[in-house]
Amino acid sequence: MDSISVSEVTVIGRTHLGFMHSFRQPFSGVPMSPKFCYSRVEGPRAISSSDTNTTSQFAYGERTAATNSDLGYKINGVNLKSRTLISSVKERLLLDANDDAYGGVIVDHEKLPSNPYAFASILRASLSDWRRKGKKGVWLKLPVEQSEFVPIAIKEGFEYHHAEKGYVMLTYWIPEEEPSMLPANASHQVGVGGFVLNQHKEVLVVQEKYCAPSITGLWKLPTGFINESEEIFSGAVREVKEETGVDTEFSEVIAFRHAHNVAFEKSDLFFICMLRPLSDKITIDSLEIEAAKWMPLVEFVEQPMIREDKMFKRVIEICEARLSHRYCGLSPHRLVSTFDGKPSSLYYNVVDDDHDPSNYCNTDFL
Ligand SMILES: NC(=O)c1ccc[n+]([C@@H]2O[C@H](COP(=O)([O-])OP(=O)(O)OC[C@H]3O[C@@H](n4cnc5c(N)ncnc54)[C@H](O)[C@@H]3O)[C@@H](O)[C@H]2O)c1
Image (cartoon, rainbow, N blue to C red):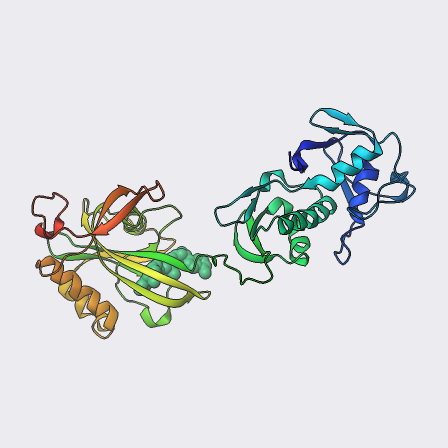
Protein backbone atom coordinates (compact mmCIF):
# COMPACT_ATOMS: atom_id res chain seq x y z
CA MET A 1 0.00 0.00 0.00
CA ASP A 2 1.42 3.32 -1.05
CA SER A 3 -0.36 5.46 1.46
CA ILE A 4 -3.05 5.41 4.08
CA SER A 5 -6.09 7.36 3.08
CA VAL A 6 -7.71 9.85 5.38
CA SER A 7 -10.89 7.87 5.46
CA GLU A 8 -9.09 4.85 6.84
CA VAL A 9 -8.03 6.67 9.98
CA THR A 10 -10.33 6.87 12.97
CA VAL A 11 -9.16 8.98 15.85
CA ILE A 12 -10.30 7.57 19.15
CA GLY A 13 -10.55 8.95 22.64
CA ARG A 14 -10.00 12.38 24.07
CA THR A 15 -6.30 12.51 23.41
CA HIS A 16 -6.85 12.70 19.66
CA LEU A 17 -6.78 16.43 20.14
CA GLY A 18 -3.05 16.45 20.32
CA PHE A 19 -2.92 14.68 16.98
CA MET A 20 -5.37 17.00 15.27
CA HIS A 21 -3.69 19.97 16.86
CA SER A 22 -0.59 19.01 14.99
CA PHE A 23 -2.26 20.00 11.74
CA ARG A 24 -2.37 23.61 12.84
CA GLN A 25 1.31 24.21 12.39
CA PRO A 26 2.62 23.41 8.94
CA PHE A 27 0.61 25.53 6.56
CA SER A 28 2.10 28.87 7.20
CA GLY A 29 0.28 31.71 5.54
CA VAL A 30 -3.09 29.91 5.63
CA PRO A 31 -5.45 31.70 7.98
CA MET A 32 -6.79 29.12 10.38
CA SER A 33 -9.28 30.90 12.51
CA PRO A 34 -11.40 30.06 14.37
CA LYS A 35 -9.44 27.17 15.74
CA PHE A 36 -11.39 23.99 16.04
CA CYS A 37 -10.96 20.34 15.55
CA TYR A 38 -13.24 17.51 14.67
CA SER A 39 -13.82 14.16 16.19
CA ARG A 40 -15.99 11.67 14.36
CA VAL A 41 -17.22 10.66 17.79
CA GLU A 42 -17.74 14.04 19.42
CA GLY A 43 -18.13 16.38 16.43
CA PRO A 44 -16.40 19.72 16.05
CA ARG A 45 -15.28 21.68 19.09
CA ALA A 46 -12.92 24.50 19.83
CA ILE A 47 -9.32 23.80 20.76
CA SER A 48 -8.09 25.48 23.89
CA SER A 49 -4.61 25.24 25.32
CA SER A 50 -5.92 22.88 27.99
CA ASP A 51 -7.21 20.51 25.34
CA THR A 52 -3.81 19.08 24.62
CA ASN A 53 -0.96 17.77 26.71
CA THR A 54 1.58 17.93 23.97
CA THR A 55 4.88 19.23 25.19
CA SER A 56 5.77 20.35 21.73
CA GLN A 57 3.31 20.53 18.89
CA PHE A 58 4.63 18.72 15.88
CA ALA A 59 4.58 20.13 12.43
CA TYR A 60 3.40 17.86 9.67
CA GLY A 61 6.37 16.52 7.80
CA GLU A 62 8.75 18.79 9.60
CA ARG A 63 9.27 17.77 13.19
CA THR A 64 8.30 14.68 15.07
CA ALA A 65 5.75 14.82 17.81
CA ALA A 66 6.35 14.71 21.46
CA THR A 67 2.84 13.69 22.39
CA ASN A 68 1.09 11.83 25.14
CA SER A 69 2.04 8.24 25.45
CA ASP A 70 -1.64 7.31 25.72
CA LEU A 71 -2.50 8.89 22.43
CA GLY A 72 -4.74 6.43 20.62
CA TYR A 73 -5.71 6.01 16.94
CA LYS A 74 -7.45 3.25 15.16
CA ILE A 75 -6.34 2.46 11.65
CA ASN A 76 -8.20 -0.28 9.83
CA GLY A 77 -9.34 -1.56 13.22
CA VAL A 78 -5.85 -1.58 14.76
CA ASN A 79 -5.13 0.61 17.78
CA LEU A 80 -1.92 2.60 17.47
CA LYS A 81 -0.10 3.99 20.45
CA SER A 82 3.50 4.03 19.38
CA ARG A 83 4.95 7.42 18.60
CA THR A 84 6.88 5.94 15.72
CA LEU A 85 3.78 4.48 14.19
CA ILE A 86 1.88 7.71 14.60
CA SER A 87 4.69 9.58 12.98
CA SER A 88 4.81 7.20 10.05
CA VAL A 89 1.02 7.31 9.60
CA LYS A 90 1.18 11.05 9.75
CA GLU A 91 3.74 11.18 6.99
CA ARG A 92 1.74 8.87 4.80
CA LEU A 93 -1.61 10.61 5.11
CA LEU A 94 -2.71 11.62 1.65
CA LEU A 95 -5.96 12.53 -0.01
CA ASP A 96 -7.82 9.67 -1.66
CA ALA A 97 -7.51 10.20 -5.40
CA ASN A 98 -7.89 8.25 -8.62
CA ASP A 99 -5.67 8.58 -11.66
CA ASP A 100 -7.27 10.07 -14.74
CA ALA A 101 -6.47 9.23 -18.36
CA TYR A 102 -4.21 12.27 -18.82
CA GLY A 103 -1.61 11.67 -16.14
CA GLY A 104 -3.54 13.61 -13.53
CA VAL A 105 -5.56 12.77 -10.44
CA ILE A 106 -9.18 13.23 -9.36
CA VAL A 107 -9.57 13.65 -5.62
CA ASP A 108 -12.36 11.58 -4.08
CA HIS A 109 -14.56 14.31 -2.57
CA GLU A 110 -16.46 11.77 -0.49
CA LYS A 111 -13.32 10.97 1.48
CA LEU A 112 -12.07 14.42 2.33
CA PRO A 113 -10.88 15.07 5.89
CA SER A 114 -13.48 16.49 8.22
CA ASN A 115 -11.68 19.59 9.42
CA PRO A 116 -9.81 22.40 7.69
CA TYR A 117 -6.56 21.89 9.60
CA ALA A 118 -6.26 18.31 8.49
CA PHE A 119 -7.34 19.26 4.98
CA ALA A 120 -4.69 21.97 4.63
CA SER A 121 -1.94 19.73 5.83
CA ILE A 122 -2.96 16.66 3.88
CA LEU A 123 -3.57 18.68 0.72
CA ARG A 124 -0.03 20.05 0.87
CA ALA A 125 1.40 16.60 1.49
CA SER A 126 -0.64 15.17 -1.36
CA LEU A 127 0.57 17.87 -3.76
CA SER A 128 4.17 17.02 -2.86
CA ASP A 129 3.44 13.35 -3.40
CA TRP A 130 1.76 13.93 -6.79
CA ARG A 131 4.59 16.25 -7.86
CA ARG A 132 7.15 13.61 -6.91
CA LYS A 133 5.22 11.02 -8.93
CA GLY A 134 5.09 13.29 -12.02
CA LYS A 135 1.32 13.81 -11.89
CA LYS A 136 -0.06 16.68 -13.97
CA GLY A 137 -3.57 18.00 -13.45
CA VAL A 138 -5.40 17.77 -10.11
CA TRP A 139 -9.21 17.93 -9.95
CA LEU A 140 -10.55 18.85 -6.53
CA LYS A 141 -14.32 18.97 -6.06
CA LEU A 142 -15.34 20.70 -2.83
CA PRO A 143 -18.95 20.12 -1.76
CA VAL A 144 -20.85 23.12 -0.39
CA GLU A 145 -20.79 21.47 3.05
CA GLN A 146 -17.00 21.88 3.04
CA SER A 147 -16.85 25.34 1.53
CA GLU A 148 -14.41 26.40 4.27
CA PHE A 149 -11.81 24.32 2.39
CA VAL A 150 -12.00 26.59 -0.68
CA PRO A 151 -9.73 29.42 0.57
CA ILE A 152 -7.27 26.83 1.84
CA ALA A 153 -6.99 25.20 -1.58
CA ILE A 154 -6.79 28.59 -3.33
CA LYS A 155 -3.96 29.60 -1.02
CA GLU A 156 -2.21 26.39 -1.98
CA GLY A 157 -2.36 27.40 -5.66
CA PHE A 158 -5.63 25.86 -6.86
CA GLU A 159 -7.82 27.78 -9.30
CA TYR A 160 -11.60 27.87 -9.78
CA HIS A 161 -12.72 25.72 -12.69
CA HIS A 162 -16.50 25.75 -12.39
CA ALA A 163 -19.25 25.72 -9.81
CA GLU A 164 -22.68 24.15 -9.51
CA LYS A 165 -25.26 24.52 -6.77
CA GLY A 166 -23.72 21.76 -4.67
CA TYR A 167 -20.00 22.17 -5.23
CA VAL A 168 -17.09 24.10 -6.64
CA MET A 169 -14.50 22.36 -8.81
CA LEU A 170 -10.92 23.51 -8.39
CA THR A 171 -7.90 22.55 -10.45
CA TYR A 172 -4.15 22.62 -10.05
CA TRP A 173 -1.62 22.09 -12.84
CA ILE A 174 1.52 20.65 -11.33
CA PRO A 175 4.24 20.74 -14.07
CA GLU A 176 5.84 24.15 -13.88
CA GLU A 177 7.71 23.68 -17.15
CA GLU A 178 4.57 22.84 -19.17
CA PRO A 179 1.55 25.02 -19.92
CA SER A 180 -1.68 23.78 -18.39
CA MET A 181 -3.53 21.38 -20.64
CA LEU A 182 -6.63 21.23 -18.46
CA PRO A 183 -9.78 21.88 -20.51
CA ALA A 184 -11.71 25.05 -19.70
CA ASN A 185 -15.18 25.00 -18.22
CA ALA A 186 -18.18 24.50 -20.54
CA SER A 187 -18.38 27.49 -22.83
CA HIS A 188 -21.98 27.37 -24.08
CA GLN A 189 -25.59 27.36 -23.05
CA VAL A 190 -27.97 25.48 -25.31
CA GLY A 191 -31.39 26.79 -26.25
CA VAL A 192 -34.24 25.44 -28.35
CA GLY A 193 -37.10 27.05 -30.22
CA GLY A 194 -40.19 25.24 -31.51
CA PHE A 195 -41.76 25.98 -34.89
CA VAL A 196 -45.18 24.32 -34.62
CA LEU A 197 -47.58 24.63 -37.53
CA ASN A 198 -51.14 23.27 -37.52
CA GLN A 199 -53.28 22.11 -40.44
CA HIS A 200 -54.74 25.62 -40.78
CA LYS A 201 -51.25 26.98 -41.49
CA GLU A 202 -51.21 28.69 -38.13
CA VAL A 203 -48.02 28.88 -36.13
CA LEU A 204 -47.91 28.52 -32.35
CA VAL A 205 -46.58 31.80 -30.90
CA VAL A 206 -46.05 33.37 -27.50
CA GLN A 207 -45.46 36.75 -25.95
CA GLU A 208 -42.89 36.61 -23.20
CA LYS A 209 -43.59 38.11 -19.81
CA TYR A 210 -40.00 39.24 -19.35
CA CYS A 211 -38.06 40.32 -22.41
CA ALA A 212 -35.85 43.05 -23.81
CA PRO A 213 -37.80 46.28 -24.44
CA SER A 214 -36.92 45.95 -28.14
CA ILE A 215 -39.10 42.84 -28.51
CA THR A 216 -41.99 43.77 -26.21
CA GLY A 217 -45.25 42.77 -27.85
CA LEU A 218 -43.57 40.48 -30.39
CA TRP A 219 -45.34 37.22 -31.14
CA LYS A 220 -42.45 34.77 -31.26
CA LEU A 221 -41.74 31.05 -31.29
CA PRO A 222 -41.67 29.34 -27.87
CA THR A 223 -38.04 29.18 -26.74
CA GLY A 224 -36.10 27.98 -23.72
CA PHE A 225 -33.01 26.20 -22.50
CA ILE A 226 -32.42 22.48 -22.47
CA ASN A 227 -31.68 20.88 -19.12
CA GLU A 228 -28.61 18.94 -18.11
CA SER A 229 -28.56 15.52 -19.82
CA GLU A 230 -31.66 16.42 -21.84
CA GLU A 231 -31.84 15.75 -25.58
CA ILE A 232 -32.43 18.64 -27.96
CA PHE A 233 -35.46 16.83 -29.38
CA SER A 234 -37.09 16.22 -26.00
CA GLY A 235 -36.10 19.66 -24.69
CA ALA A 236 -37.92 21.34 -27.59
CA VAL A 237 -41.07 19.28 -26.98
CA ARG A 238 -40.91 20.01 -23.22
CA GLU A 239 -40.42 23.76 -23.69
CA VAL A 240 -43.39 24.04 -26.06
CA LYS A 241 -45.53 22.03 -23.65
CA GLU A 242 -44.45 24.08 -20.62
CA GLU A 243 -45.01 27.46 -22.24
CA THR A 244 -48.21 26.74 -24.20
CA GLY A 245 -49.66 23.44 -22.99
CA VAL A 246 -49.58 22.08 -26.56
CA ASP A 247 -48.33 18.51 -27.08
CA THR A 248 -45.98 18.04 -29.99
CA GLU A 249 -43.84 15.47 -31.73
CA PHE A 250 -40.29 16.36 -32.74
CA SER A 251 -39.52 16.34 -36.43
CA GLU A 252 -36.28 18.10 -37.37
CA VAL A 253 -33.65 20.60 -36.36
CA ILE A 254 -34.20 23.13 -39.08
CA ALA A 255 -31.22 25.39 -38.33
CA PHE A 256 -29.06 26.46 -35.44
CA ARG A 257 -27.63 29.78 -34.44
CA HIS A 258 -24.25 30.29 -32.76
CA ALA A 259 -23.76 33.56 -30.86
CA HIS A 260 -21.11 34.72 -28.38
CA ASN A 261 -21.05 36.67 -25.14
CA VAL A 262 -24.72 35.96 -24.57
CA ALA A 263 -24.83 34.94 -20.92
CA PHE A 264 -22.04 36.15 -18.62
CA GLU A 265 -19.43 35.74 -21.39
CA LYS A 266 -20.79 32.32 -22.35
CA SER A 267 -21.75 31.56 -25.94
CA ASP A 268 -25.16 30.36 -27.03
CA LEU A 269 -26.24 27.54 -29.33
CA PHE A 270 -29.86 27.93 -30.35
CA PHE A 271 -31.53 25.04 -32.17
CA ILE A 272 -34.66 25.89 -34.13
CA CYS A 273 -36.81 22.78 -34.29
CA MET A 274 -39.83 21.83 -36.36
CA LEU A 275 -42.47 20.03 -34.36
CA ARG A 276 -45.84 18.51 -35.27
CA PRO A 277 -48.76 19.46 -33.08
CA LEU A 278 -50.52 16.58 -31.33
CA SER A 279 -53.04 18.83 -29.58
CA ASP A 280 -54.25 22.39 -30.07
CA LYS A 281 -55.60 23.58 -26.72
CA ILE A 282 -53.43 26.36 -25.28
CA THR A 283 -52.70 26.65 -21.57
CA ILE A 284 -49.96 29.15 -20.84
CA ASP A 285 -47.31 29.05 -18.14
CA SER A 286 -48.27 32.37 -16.56
CA LEU A 287 -44.94 32.64 -14.71
CA GLU A 288 -43.00 32.96 -17.93
CA ILE A 289 -45.50 33.71 -20.69
CA GLU A 290 -47.81 36.70 -21.12
CA ALA A 291 -49.92 35.18 -23.90
CA ALA A 292 -49.91 32.41 -26.52
CA LYS A 293 -52.02 31.69 -29.59
CA TRP A 294 -52.20 30.05 -32.99
CA MET A 295 -51.37 32.81 -35.47
CA PRO A 296 -51.71 32.60 -39.26
CA LEU A 297 -48.22 32.10 -40.70
CA VAL A 298 -48.63 35.06 -43.07
CA GLU A 299 -49.55 37.32 -40.18
CA PHE A 300 -46.61 36.05 -38.12
CA VAL A 301 -44.16 36.80 -40.92
CA GLU A 302 -45.66 40.24 -41.48
CA GLN A 303 -44.79 41.45 -37.98
CA PRO A 304 -42.38 44.38 -38.47
CA MET A 305 -39.90 42.95 -35.99
CA ILE A 306 -39.74 39.68 -37.93
CA ARG A 307 -39.63 41.35 -41.36
CA GLU A 308 -36.86 43.70 -40.30
CA ASP A 309 -34.73 41.21 -38.40
CA LYS A 310 -32.32 39.31 -40.65
CA MET A 311 -32.17 36.26 -38.42
CA PHE A 312 -35.89 35.89 -37.61
CA LYS A 313 -36.70 36.49 -41.28
CA ARG A 314 -34.24 33.87 -42.48
CA VAL A 315 -35.50 31.31 -39.94
CA ILE A 316 -39.04 31.72 -41.26
CA GLU A 317 -37.81 31.44 -44.85
CA ILE A 318 -36.05 28.19 -43.98
CA CYS A 319 -39.20 26.83 -42.33
CA GLU A 320 -41.24 27.78 -45.37
CA ALA A 321 -38.68 26.11 -47.65
CA ARG A 322 -39.03 22.98 -45.57
CA LEU A 323 -42.82 23.04 -45.87
CA SER A 324 -42.51 23.09 -49.66
CA HIS A 325 -39.80 20.36 -49.69
CA ARG A 326 -37.12 22.71 -50.96
CA TYR A 327 -35.06 22.12 -47.86
CA CYS A 328 -34.52 19.34 -45.38
CA GLY A 329 -33.56 19.59 -41.71
CA LEU A 330 -31.70 17.18 -39.48
CA SER A 331 -33.42 14.40 -37.60
CA PRO A 332 -31.93 12.55 -34.61
CA HIS A 333 -30.72 8.98 -34.86
CA ARG A 334 -29.81 7.16 -31.67
CA LEU A 335 -26.41 5.49 -31.86
CA VAL A 336 -23.90 4.02 -29.47
CA SER A 337 -20.31 4.75 -30.37
CA THR A 338 -17.62 2.31 -29.31
CA PHE A 339 -15.46 5.39 -28.85
CA ASP A 340 -17.02 6.17 -25.50
CA GLY A 341 -19.74 3.51 -25.19
CA LYS A 342 -22.40 6.16 -24.64
CA PRO A 343 -25.76 6.28 -26.40
CA SER A 344 -25.97 9.55 -28.26
CA SER A 345 -28.02 11.34 -30.91
CA LEU A 346 -26.55 11.98 -34.32
CA TYR A 347 -28.54 14.60 -36.23
CA TYR A 348 -28.54 14.18 -39.99
CA ASN A 349 -30.93 14.00 -42.91
CA VAL A 350 -31.51 10.97 -45.06
CA VAL A 351 -32.53 12.53 -48.36
CA ASP A 352 -30.75 9.80 -50.34
CA ASP A 353 -32.62 6.95 -48.74
CA ASP A 354 -36.28 6.91 -49.74
CA HIS A 355 -36.92 3.71 -47.80
CA ASP A 356 -35.80 5.05 -44.47
CA PRO A 357 -38.97 5.72 -42.46
CA SER A 358 -37.15 8.48 -40.61
CA ASN A 359 -36.77 10.41 -43.85
CA TYR A 360 -39.18 13.16 -42.93
CA CYS A 361 -38.03 15.29 -45.82
CA ASN A 362 -40.51 13.37 -47.94
CA THR A 363 -43.38 13.85 -45.57
CA ASP A 364 -45.73 16.80 -45.41
CA PHE A 365 -46.20 18.95 -42.35
CA LEU A 366 -49.67 20.15 -43.24
N1 LIG B 1 -36.42 35.07 -26.60
C1 LIG B 1 -36.11 35.34 -27.87
O1 LIG B 1 -36.71 36.16 -28.52
C2 LIG B 1 -35.00 34.57 -28.54
C3 LIG B 1 -34.59 34.99 -29.79
C4 LIG B 1 -33.56 34.30 -30.40
C5 LIG B 1 -33.00 33.21 -29.79
N2 LIG B 1 -33.42 32.82 -28.56
C6 LIG B 1 -32.78 31.68 -27.97
O2 LIG B 1 -33.68 30.94 -27.20
C7 LIG B 1 -32.96 30.26 -26.22
C8 LIG B 1 -33.68 30.48 -24.92
O3 LIG B 1 -33.72 31.88 -24.72
P1 LIG B 1 -34.97 32.58 -24.04
O4 LIG B 1 -34.96 34.00 -24.50
O5 LIG B 1 -36.21 31.77 -24.24
O6 LIG B 1 -34.57 32.48 -22.55
P2 LIG B 1 -34.87 33.54 -21.41
O7 LIG B 1 -33.71 34.44 -21.26
O8 LIG B 1 -36.21 34.14 -21.65
O9 LIG B 1 -34.89 32.58 -20.16
C9 LIG B 1 -35.87 31.57 -20.05
C10 LIG B 1 -36.55 31.75 -18.73
O10 LIG B 1 -35.62 31.59 -17.68
C11 LIG B 1 -35.90 32.49 -16.64
N3 LIG B 1 -34.76 33.39 -16.49
C12 LIG B 1 -33.73 33.58 -17.35
N4 LIG B 1 -32.84 34.44 -16.84
C13 LIG B 1 -33.32 34.80 -15.66
C14 LIG B 1 -32.85 35.69 -14.65
N5 LIG B 1 -31.69 36.34 -14.77
N6 LIG B 1 -33.58 35.83 -13.54
C15 LIG B 1 -34.75 35.17 -13.38
N7 LIG B 1 -35.24 34.31 -14.31
C16 LIG B 1 -34.54 34.15 -15.41
C17 LIG B 1 -37.15 33.24 -17.02
O11 LIG B 1 -38.26 32.56 -16.49
C18 LIG B 1 -37.16 33.13 -18.52
O12 LIG B 1 -38.44 33.25 -19.03
C19 LIG B 1 -31.53 30.81 -26.23
O13 LIG B 1 -30.71 29.90 -26.87
C20 LIG B 1 -31.68 32.08 -27.03
O14 LIG B 1 -30.50 32.40 -27.73
C21 LIG B 1 -34.42 33.48 -27.92
